Length: 260
Length: 309
Image (cartoon, rainbow over all chains, first blue to last red; front, side):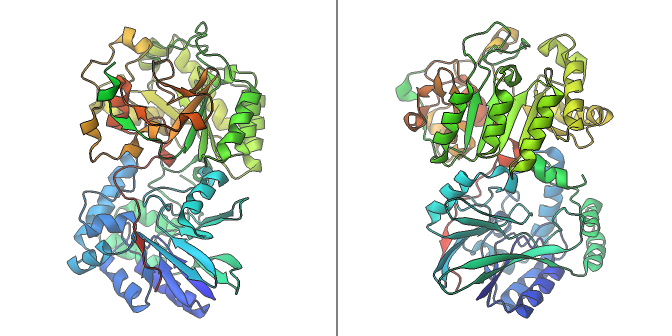
């Protein structure tokens, strides 16, 4: 069986629409979203009908908890004043444009999902199994740490998002972590496509992971972001594929791969 | 110090970061704000050996340590440091805290090659206490700004993106201005993606002579931990290995009561927040950790859903 995992929609309803269609075309039976529906892009309310119509099972991200409970900020945990400045613009816009019904829906999402498919035990979370807004970067996460986190869930495979960059690792102990990537903005790789993850599980629990690039109408998204008065820096990321904000939380290795 | 019975205690939630005080209290500089009074002549703590580091790295696996930090004193004074960093990169991400005044190209070449061979980051944290010699040199010593900037240039030539850390010796409201000026200065020196981190002053060690120590009232009381996310405190997720045993955190190594044991297992016990510096950690969060590993706010411990259907 095939399962599709989306992360970090960041209001990018156009990419979500394209990803749902792509996952259906590839015969994904179940669709999951690991949270952070809002941020960054335009028209937050356009994301929710797509998720509901496609029957996407959703986990609550830190952004969803914040919007759902109308908290003062997004709880992304940036430490740099410039990053916090842009996070503020994005959060205020998203909070203002998310309807009360959708806020209530976000508020009620589970913080994690545990499920079993073909004998494979999955734990789905947003940041890490122990904390919604913990960044698990590829270059700053040891195997021993992953083993500790995964062990506590009782799962064979843990899937998360939150960092914006997709990666996977199987530890020496045979446990696997997958960061499913995000649909909201490109992966700081100079390409305009965004990423989701397909998990193929065979009988007996053997599995393979595929990261899938999604092309969508990014020019339209950029236009709509401009029309909504969102920062030019955000638009540049959509058009160029390079991150321009939220850079100071990146470890050096991930930062070096980008342009800024 | 206050009575232990009146202190707030913090459990070790998990050993996320392990610190190695590889150079002890030996440093080629004698900064007037150094919270453990490091200098060329301070032998209170000695060098760790490569074998010391290796055996703790092995022990650290069962603790699920996320990342390793190497500090001193000046770590690069330890002749085995490069080998230690290369070895540690085989276990996880590594950060080294340096004043960048004693770096050699051959070391940086070897370290870059070691980093490229595995999946983990090697971070350089460079201490420079302001964007110009007028701010930095009175604290770190005559000519140290220029020497450290040469070190930053050297790191950049070797492909590193150093994190410049500075202890705040100016009023808080000037942070943005100082950060802006420092970014400009770093760009002029070839560091086109400046990464900066401001640290609060720690009123310990030499800093007590330079300005003042903690007042008696600057203590974390048990009541202050009610409703407080104690994972913001470094003692809830780290320990520091020295040649005199394992201590609760890198800040308090020469303070009474901070010694926790000889093995990691012995250090898995609650720590009383009875020092003034605990108040600084309480106010500012785990200041010693890199920005990529910090988490802020209360976003929570996850509650689990029914499962997918």
